Image (cartoon, rainbow, N blue to C red; front, side, top):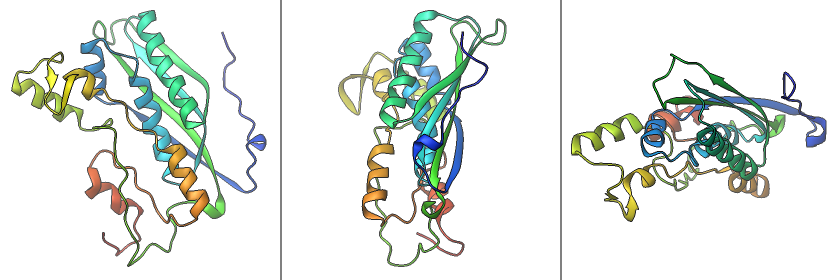
Length: 230
């Protein structure tokens, strides 16, 4: 048993005039595929990525992460797989996993079901917050490749799979030799180290958009000045 809260020494992080940035997110109905396939070892990576990727697009370095795992009945092996994924992703993102909550609530969830939520805090120097105000004409837009569908749109994906009469253990039509369920569970890419490196080394990045629900058409405008289109 740990304490009642996680502690983090902000001074040791080396910031001079920092702003804290907080994000929270979940994995959505991608969880249903993990549950139905019995593959739980990557879903924790998705949870962390959805949170820390929201931090980095504001120029923030992820500092720490906490998770919330709720289920009707705790199966130790499932919980261990999920937490291992969370820990692995936190290590890759360079942030500390300082705590979390496991809630066992009989009657609230169907047998085998669970839900996940994550919370992350990062910091950025006040002078380096993104987006910058000088986004404008002639700026170049670059797209970074995803690892797959990431963690949005899975209600539609599951509906398509169901209407097509496919099973999770058939070969994925877009990934030869890989089961459909495994291919769809490819974890969300963590952009933290690569993107922060470019921001700090080039000082040329003016804005970043995390393409989640709503796609490019709904997320790119969130970082553009009023009256600007792309």
